[in-house]
Image (cartoon, rainbow, N blue to C red; front, side, top):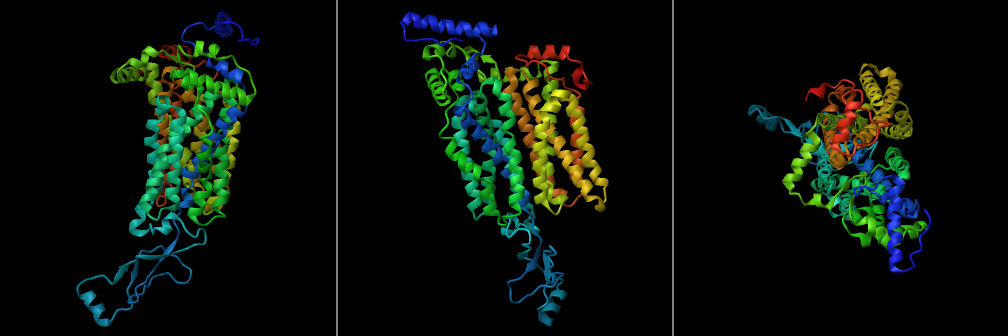
Length: 573
């Protein structure tokens, strides 16, 4: 498009602005009032320094995630212990001799006078005492949360809440991710980062275990708000032709962080220092979020066009690009509401009551057969996938005596899976790839149960293969979340799926902490069964690879009619 000189008269300006809009519409063959042309401005701004700030922000958030979600096997590692006594009247007698830590909670009173001992026996009173003081084996770690607060014996159940409170926070926080649509992406991001920073400080400095749990809950609750706000900001700022590349780049820091956690955990043996070092990203985010701008797309969506124009001018300046002057942008920014997913919501639709909105939402998700299948099936796939995704790394302490190497290798293989995902999906499609890889994951995890101690290397190989397959499956469910739901329901559909996944995280964390250590076969069996269930559920969904995105429920219905059905058990619903 040729550059436009706006230094002429007012009439000339209006004519040029009108020409700019018409040219945009004709270029894409979209002249309807409801079309979203904001991406054209982003193309003019180009890719440069302005977007890099957003990309760095989401990358730090992705790196911060495993530091909180999968670090508990190290920070809260249960250490072997033995009973000690500070009471000079009593000593203890058990199997704890030398450097043996037997994890026993009761010891014998052997320094009793004969008369006292006979009186205890006469009145049928126990000659054993419950241990209140413990000595821990610091071979692996000098201190962990469990050892510092003596979360053993009758207090062992409190240890499980260290991971549970984070997962509960994640699940509840996912219900409020839509606040960014109302109050702005940037303000929600800043609030979430600041409160998460306070939570990290609370966990690292608090001398009280219950305050640590509160800090963990705050981190979990505000992470979904922080993550989705930053991701939306990034995608609303990146030109459309760069979005697939950026979407692949921003997940890489997650896997690098997993490897880093595994490596650092073998070097840093005090949990508070380890916690602060792996949480360094939140301190950097506390600075970065105050030097980035609000999304111009969201500002235009809210009718704050002057601020949107200012943001676009700042973007063009940083990227050293030229964009049309104010009148050009105002003319086509101000008369419609724009969505990152390509939908347009007219302002008159915002005047509905909350009950009308709820009714419309329910009708959208359950009003047609095709939408009912998606609404019921896809969140279940996310639930089962979430159990496997978070369960395998959390099970490190139950699987191996070397969780450090386990975590490093897991990060490496997850990185491999992220690099393979796009190629495999493009070649074989979402459904076929997902079914095969979910079945493969289940087979690997179940086979481990039947291998003896002498086949340790084979077990390791199966776990890492399952991790690669799970990593690709994780990418598939995220893609299907954006491809199956129509534009008018995509954000709410994503929220439902994210809620399901975080609920799976809670369930996996509880099983791992409370049961898996005592029932060795349970966790692998659970993850294997979840993988098989996910494969079966994928049979109910249509293939989306190479298909256009649906904007309306009718588009979803039409897609269901033209897409070959796999084995739609739910078609009778």
